[in-house]
Length: 428
Image 1 (tube, rainbow, N blue to C red):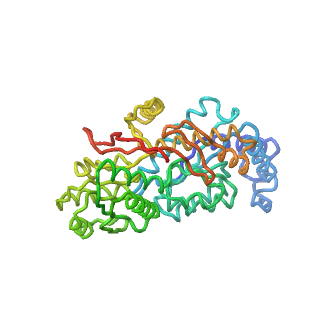
Image 2 (image 1 turned 90 degrees about the horizontal axis):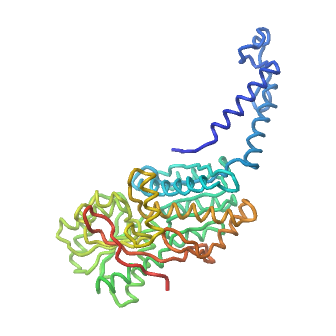
Image 3 (image 1 turned 180 degrees about the horizontal axis):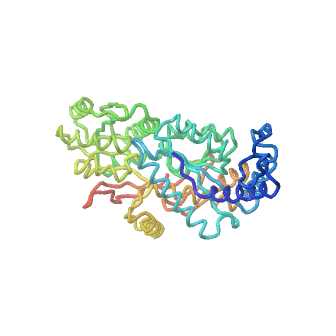
């Protein structure tokens, strides 16, 4: 799936001009209504491009017009790849909404030196191969200035080497595995990373929930899940806690009875589930049916309006770390929510929407500071981002191209059931 704003109308104008020039020149391609009958009966002469000889120069002219427009007052094209469909569809949809809102605001304010931002966007369907294909198309065919995406760390790691090789900066809004930006100096992110998120969850479990013994239930096929598991375990044990039960599953599994039965037998104070919302919702339902009343705790992969729809009351009283909370007492957050709700039919933005918005805003800020929009100059400007006031916090990019920022912990509570702000935890 591809969604695009803009350039087809300009191509049509150029094509119409080319046809007019063909007609005025006495086109011999046989397709013009006023072409001489004798000419239309003769076979058109082919060029190396497959175009009639008289059409080729005009096609080149049309291409030249578009190229000139792109260089002088035409749009700046940026790309986004995300899971618009599939089991993690809300991730890509929310991120896309945040990016589009940022673009709309930026263009309304004049764009980049009078040039509008145009978005090319492809659906990964939550698949690593699709992510690679999407980014290849963005950098090679669409010739984007920069790429935004993905949410899932595994997909970002699949696509990042393509951007690196092409010399096109890539900004992940929300991939938290440390290895994402290790793919090269063109790769950035605006979210915190798992070592910090693991610390946040461990500290909250130990200090706020007073947990001494924990269990971990991990999606063994996801780099996000296994990486966050490792960091939680390391930090929880450092704080004096014990991880006494470890169980695994594969994303999309439907039956978690065996894992939850083993966890129940371990008598733990908290169950850490660093997975995605679809699986977490099903795990919560099955845990409560088995009589497991222990609080569930997770990371930002829980963040979706679908979580309470899947789990219902089974997820009430559970916690997860996130990038922002809709009820935070912060003027930037509340202003963003008002604009988002106005744009998207009253929907409340989740953390993925906020991160998509911040990723686009940081890109525009870097574009304004860059010497040029070449990959190297834009990369240098992104690397120089300091104290950027975003919706998801004040963001500085460190020497590894990661964002240094605070995290929040939210509790699933209230009516309607949703994430409620509990605490902010800053980097040490």
